[in-house]
Length: 111
Length: 113
Image (cartoon, rainbow over all chains, first blue to last red; front, side):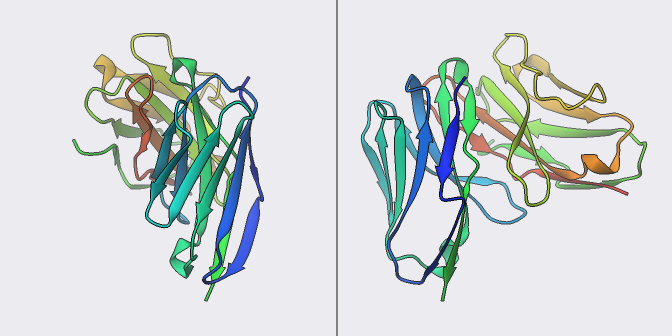
């Protein structure tokens, strides 16, 4: 059974810092890994989707990497802004299109 | 449609009443998930539909909860005899198979009073 873990559970940084969120998974037989953002009381917004054959994906200030063999992904946020404050979730998609979520990292960027 | 649509966006109901929550997935998406998220908590898996296969109902918390997906498209989550602990945001997500990612709806906020 796939298990997904996110570290840290919570993170508070001053504005402008670069930061890294970590995601690990136990079963490397994945189709893809997806990073989501969730604002309080809202649904999930997809940030980046990395296929199992890819090493990284970039969108603006966000960069996600994937090391499938070691079961790890990182989300790098450059020059953090207060508007980046949210919960960040990673999810892996396995055979049968099963989706397994990590517990999330709650990020607070202070002005 | 362009995205996953959920209705209603908000629902307030009295304890003991039945409610139906609707999810319109993106056209052609074969996989559909329902999740529940209580205030300040993580995502709780409820049920998963994949094509014409029997759904994975292992996350449904009690027999008061049921879900259908008609014609491989629209899905309805039904909660009978609602309880206050059912109050949560109910999220739906859909995907094509294989390498495609999941798209989430905006959710239905259910409040049982």
